[in-house]
Image (tube, rainbow, N blue to C red; front, side):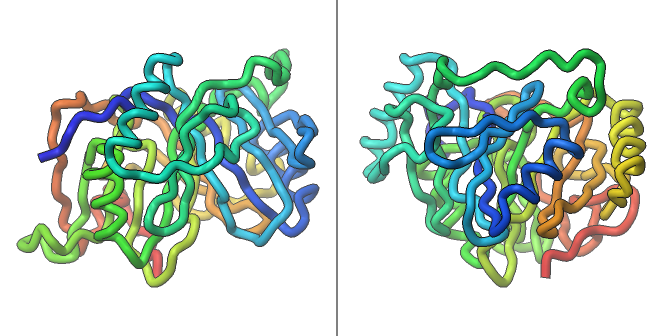
Length: 292
């Protein structure tokens, strides 16, 4: 039986991208996704837009050192701190320069770091967009997904230890509920803020921005077309999450999703189970994305 965690409600606030050439990634995300760049004291760069922000640093390609979940207030933060301690989790020093130093940071079985904290108030605010695309186009940072060769332990950690709420599972064998291939978790009523796909290795999978609907997705696609950035997958509709989507790639080949109409699910609703053999869980309209 799942326990209730004080982490609910929390929203994905930011994450860090490492790259061998940070300037290349900064330039791409500013032009393509609508970010302004701000240098940080640590030598990293803050990319910030309307309801979206990312930290860029120097390091190996495809690495994502941490992702930060924004809590509601200090009371919730202290409840999360006490909960993590009671669960026997050893927290680490907060790695995020965007949260206050007292944020709670934990490491999952694959080494991904989740940070739960409150925003620093001394960082610059996003600039006014002045109706200049893409800064003026809605794209709230909404979820992040990883691939794992350790899915059972990841499920145990996120459900039994952190007590994230499972929304959907995708099965290799629809008649065997132990054959989980994908797990989606929510930290508020949106279908998932984090998910894990079973794969041959542990790696970043994609991150997603939520926009306002089909016409906004058209505008994003037109914007990418003007930049000669092709759509890599989609458009389609995910079965798990019921959201419209398409994906592009950044210069390192990492996947970026534009999403709309993501499903909302109450905290008391249990998970659903999908047959992974027909591809409907990942795309109701057509071809899926085979991770391996």
